[in-house]
Length: 112
Image (cartoon, rainbow, N blue to C red):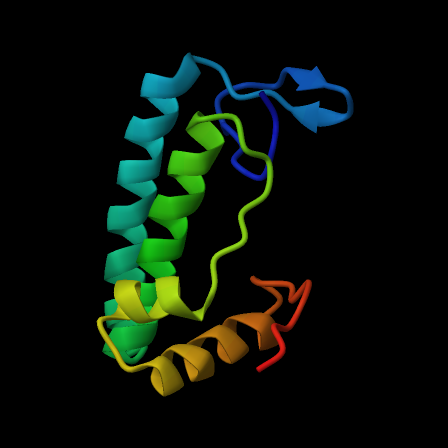
């Protein structure tokens, strides 16, 4: 399994990418640790609450999908609204901010 998560303790390279050692359980534990560090960082940087929730929701969603073998995720505004516990318009602002930071890449806009 390879992707964006990289273990600092391993130097194994598979197909030009660092290989995650330890399997799914270890990956989930590392994700939990990363999420707690991220939460402290977001609080210290005074990131707005709904955006902070969206970022944490995005990470949890990505980890869940990676564990299940999906290499890419496609969350929409509805997911961001759910994660941020905010209205759709605020979720759109949050999504645009993540796109501006290069965290999210738009692939298709829905008509209507």
